Image (cartoon, rainbow, N blue to C red; front, top):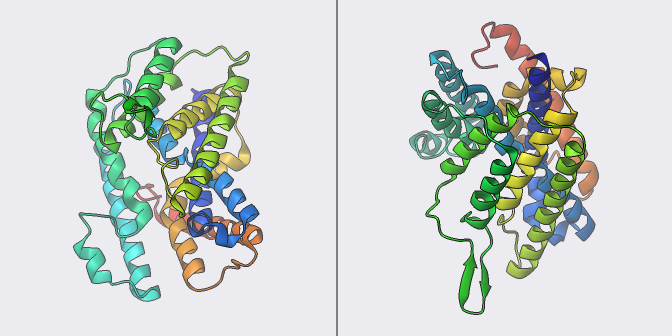
Amino acid sequence: MAQKISWLDNLRAVACLMVIVIHTTTYYVTTGPEVGAVSWDIANLLNSASRVCVPLFFMISGYLFFGERSAQGRHFLRIVLCLLFYSAVALAYITWLTPINEGLSIRKLFEKPIFYHLWFFFAIIPIYLFSPLVQVKPVQAGYLALMALIIAVIANPNTVDQSIGPMHWLPINLYISGDTFFYLLYAMLGRAIGTMTIARRGVSWAAGALFVACVLGIMIGTKKQLHINGAFADTWYLYCGPLVFIAAISLFVLFKTALDRPNGLLSFLARYSLPIYGFHALFIHFIRTHDYDFPQYPLADIVMVFSITLAGSILLAMGLQRLDKHRYIS
């Protein structure tokens, strides 16, 4: 069990860092070539490599709650309290430090979150609700690979359309729709892979190579789409897209098989991952909207914004945990 907790902590910490990378580089990716071709390519690479963060969070939740153990009342309470607390913090930020209409934010509360990153707290609730009904059985790796190929690629409605002349052949319509379907699938795969006995010889290298290949595919596809549309499009960035799906599975396997030992830094970050997630977007938004960034030096700016955001979020997280003795919101 100590081994399983270690690799999950490592994975949770890396996923948390990836979230900050995504939101740090989004400005450059969405701005387009105006930031400079090389800078845009680097931002695109960093963003592409980090797209797996949200799927990994769903997979971790599935590993924990889609087996013998299911989400209990205290877990639902924690999600609701986190949603309320970080929404209140974001609302205070909006009111005092931005020109955004806080009244409109409140009126739209049940349609969209107060601040963009808080959507995850809404999306994870169905996973918890389904957990008492789902107990993933042990399956063979071959079955999972085939299932992932069919659901994540061949029949994935987010797969880029492919045609031969007038004949459309990909994706095949299996009447799959909605992101929640894929979030549940991520959770079930997290449990199935997490409890699977995996021979380590060669598997870690294969998983790492497949992850790199998917990242390159996402990066190249996004750049190609930019040239086609004349503007940024998130076609290849979607959390439920085929390459992101396969990359998430690959990284999950890699951590389970090769990064299963305790790591001091990653354990530290994992301990504060929830409040880091809750606070980080406010730091990035403040820096970007108050001209404390340096867009004329994109690479240095990415490093600076990431570092300040991570450091500030950790400090707030540490302070919050001192107050939140029962870890309801931290």
